[in-house]
Structures are given as C-alpha cells and as structure tokens.
Image (tube, rainbow, N blue to C red; front, top):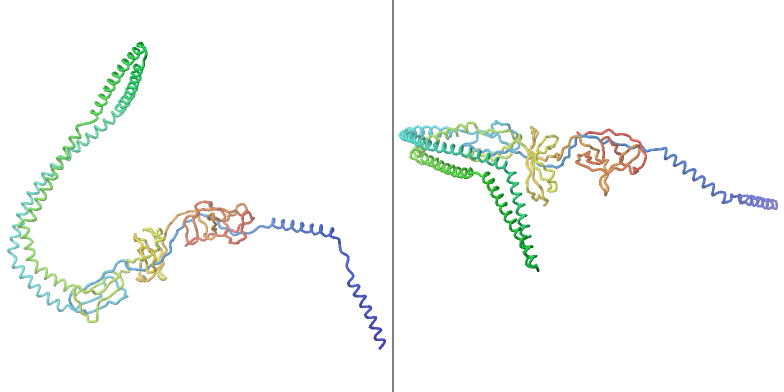
Length: 533
C-alpha cells in the first residue's frame, strides 16, 4: 500500500517535468528580419508570373473576311391556291348517264367526267331539221331582194368613197405645202440666230446711250440749280453756256439712240418673216378640209347603214337563219350531250353540285375544277414588313416535303385587319415549277429573296458584336487583338455583308469567350469558311 503510493508520487513528478519541458517556448526571429524576407519572396513571385505571362499567348479561332455572293431572305408562310378555277355547267337538259366527279380527285385535261343520256336530244334534233328546210323555202324571195339591194348599196358606197378620196388628196397637198413652210420658217430662224450677235451689240449700245442720256439730264438739273443760286451775272452766264452745251449733247445722244433703235428694228424685221402668217392660214385651211372629210365620211356611212338595202339584208338573215340557228342549236346540244363534259386542264375537283337524282338542267352548275399547273401561294404579311415585298423577287417554297421555285407577282396596295386585328398586306407568289405533288389549300413555307449581291465582303453573323456605339468585331493583327468598328449591309441566315471597316483577308476572331480583350497577344487558328447551300 505504501509502495504504490510512493510510485504514484514519483510518476506524477516525472510527468510534471515532461509537461514543463513541452511548454518551453521556442526561440523566434525578430520582425526586422522577417519583413524584408517576405518582401523579397513576393517580388520574386510577381516577376516570375510576369515573365510566364509574357512568354505565353492565347490561341484564338479566327475566320477570314472574304468576298462571296449573299442573299437576304424574308421568311413567311402562306396558303397554296389555284390561279385558275372554272365552274362547269350542264350544256343540256338530260339525265346523267355516268358521273366520275369526286371532290379531291385529280384529273387530266381531256378526261371525261360526266356523260348524258341523249335519247330525248336525238328526237328534238330530227324535228329541228324539218323546220330548217321549211324556213329555207319560204325565204327565197327575201334573199333575191336582198341581193339587189346589196348591189345598189355598193354603188352608193363607191360614190361616197370617191368624194372621200378627193378630200384626202387635198389634205395631203395642203400638208405638203405646210411642211415646206415649216422648213422655210426653220431656215429663217437659223438666219435670225446668225444675226443675234449684231442685235445683242446694238442692244448694248442703246443701253449705254440710255445711261449717257440719264447722266446728261442729271447734269442739266445741276447746272440749272447753279443758275438759280448764282450771285453774279458772270457766273450765271457761264452756267447758261454750259447748259446749252449739255442740251446739245442731249440732242446728239437722242439722235444716236434713235439711229441705233432704227438699226435694231431693221435687224429684227429682217429676222421676222411673213412665213408665220402663211403657216397660220395654211393650218386653218387644213382644219377646214379635215372637217369636210369627216362630214363626207359620216354621210357615206349613214347612207349605207340606214338604207333599205341593209334593213332587207338583216330581215333576210333573220328570216332564213331563225330556224337554222334553232336547228344548229339542237345539233350542237346533241353533239355536246354525246361528248359529255371533259376536263379542260389538269387539276383537282374542288366542288360538285351533282346530286343522286342524276338529272341536270341546261346551265345548271355541275362541278368546279381547280388547276394544279397554275398555282400560287397567297400571303398575309405584316404591314411593318411591306418593304420586303418587291414584285419580281424570287422565292423558295416548301410545301410539305417538296420544294419549289416561285416569283412574287402581285402585292396589295392597302393593309387590312386580319382576324387578330393586326394590319396585314396581301401578296401572291406564282409557283414556277408545279408538279403532281402540289396540294391545294395547304400551308407553305416561303423564303422570299429581299436582296442579292455578288462578290461582296462577308463574315459569319455570329462574330458580330453590338454596343451602344454600333457594331464591331475583334480582329487579330500582328498577333494583337484589336477592336474594329464596322458598318453592315444585307444579311443572310448565316453571314452578313461588311460595307465599311474590314478588308478582304482580315482575321476576325470567332471565339465567343468573355476573356477576349483589346491588346491581348494571341495566335490564330484559322477556320474554314462554310458556304451556304
């Protein structure tokens, strides 16, 4: 018991010494030594990082600006419709024998669609032939009378024609005379133009004389004022002498002006001619002759058209042909009944009015045929997109799985409200190459060519950036990234025209990373341009 306690005390003592040893503080370096060491380490790290950055450069994907053909298209949709539809009517009153009409069925030009039972038509035709023969015999006298009247009318027509011919000859002669006068007037005008220099000089001289006269008159007024204000008689006499000289000068100037004016008048009179009066008189005579010709032609026409002969001829034609026309009508109806109704063009049956009774009346509607060879796509385009509709523009049309070419042939000139209340413009695209796969009434997707340009500078659309200052791209020049402002033109689905800012062969950065910045060093990975199909 005692021994155990003694060991415990010793153990505790040893452990206490060990703890004291562990807690004994280590020796630390002073601060004035640590701080310079840390500064040196930071400077070394920064220098190494800078050298590493200077030696490394980014690799950027670039595309080269190049000249290509580009087409800007406008995407829209419309409904396929037939440009040519026809409603067929029954040519006869007869029962339907065969009916091959079914809505939606496709037919070819010449296909028989409806046939008729012609039993009653054949009986009616036989009776009509008998009526024709009877009417022909009863009209022989009228025919003979009409022939005599026709001969008389022909003679009167010849006389009228002679009178008309005479007036026409006079008109031709007068027109020839006027043409000579016109030529003479042109020659005189040319001569007057040659004299124009002399006339201009004379007018200038007259203007100078007018100025001299005005100056002389001013001087006379001044001298007259001096006479009135002069004190001495000697001064007055001097002024009176001067006034006399000015009056003589005024007279000389007036005479000189009158001479120049007479000379000018002579030149002008020389330039003028009596030809104008002759032309005026000739034109009046020509109008009178033309009026006489119109009256003569009217009289001749009236004499032929209102005479008894013409009335008899018409009576004969009506009398003889009345029954004949009726007979021909029955013959034609019989032929049409036997022929039936055929499709006049390739198309599809759009509607039918034939019922189960099988009986139709003449003029009654049978069916409607819509052409599949003359087809269009009707559009309703937002009024805001009106500028994209240019008549004559080409179009790519997708109808189901089939593709076609088209041409914009009409655009409405007024916007109307559609079912949603939005203003739309109606337009129509003609399908240039329809085939048997065309389906009327279905929806069609349309790519309408808005603009086409050949061999213009283009870049992919995705490389263009936009800011508040406008459009720009990043270009790689001499291993340095630069920001380049650009001006764009037309655009297709994948590329855009560059009007200003780039040159052919410029390397445009196509990477979309946010780390791209001006001034960074980089090497180019050139991407191959992909052309549009």
